[in-house]
Image 1: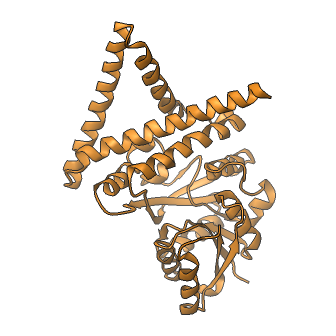
Image 2: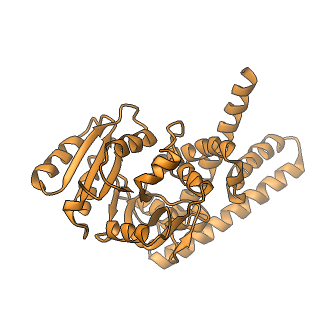
Length: 334
């Protein structure tokens, strides 16, 4: 029986699933003590074929596929955990590529008692070709875009609120429960909130690293961050003590833009404040773009960085506000 089970939620990941499996195959951890459990949501592309080809080429590494009929990430994680045989669970993503010592470092940190849930830092890469993909991979680790999400950029080991792809003992799930299937995103944060509320520690070690492929274009980035904002409110209503000041900024910014724009035709002060707010915001983003363009020697960042950060802020804030509106409306109808 393996000691470690790598669990992977998966749906239509034909382009990246093989990258993940090849990276798992290259792990320094013994294959005899390792298994991979992929919870597939009924992929309609070539994902299952890619997994099957890998299984034939590498029979020494156990790879199993289990169904995820609900086709949401937390349900996939729970299905994979239920099928896993290992004492230690390592959660990865179908479009991530862990470094060769990823599993070894996770297991070592758990056995050393660093935390009940241990994770690492993303090395974020473009999820496609072209200037949009390059810009998104840059803003995905920029403090103006992601705030204090340390797993995207820190170089110091820390106790943190959450980690993206955690590793933990099965006993932790037995104690606090699995992933909340009513949340379509933010399931990691919610799980880690329960870890901390139970007296456990969430540990981030920057020596534990994996490549993560960002969204390929601004449209995909907007959809991603709208979902993040929408489901964040649902989680905060459940755990109001986890609210952070930075989380209020995007919805307040969007709300101010809407309010000032509505007042501007009739109120001169509203027009002035709106122009000042937008002007200062764009100036800050443009300076970030110029700085990144000089640092990375990529002129596309002059426009791409401001567009990427603005997309993240406006989409997250709009999703949050829409979640609030629908939540209030639903409550009133009850």
